[in-house]
Length: 135
Image (tube, rainbow, N blue to C red):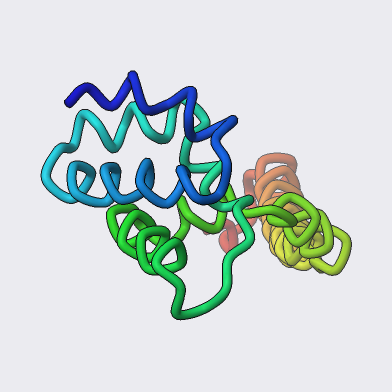
């Protein structure tokens, strides 16, 4: 059976029919990587995440089987509300970069100070070539 013929039903079928559509997907997806890829790129995985079901129902079981065919992060990515949770993380995130830059800048200042001191010493030494202490 071609899964592409089931795809329109996934988006428009009555819940009683949807159960059978997801049943077919739950049989094919575990065995077919190309079908899994198409399932994601066609928007079908996103649609499945939007379906509201009761735990323990046949529909819930089929959705669980389908979800188990994909890495958790992919399933979360296509779940409703995921973008909101990411935006919340962005708002709560405290970048550590400024601390690193401050540390780098202070190290650079120390190095510059050391170099300036060395250049000054060499310059002084060159001006006083007759001095024995120049190293």
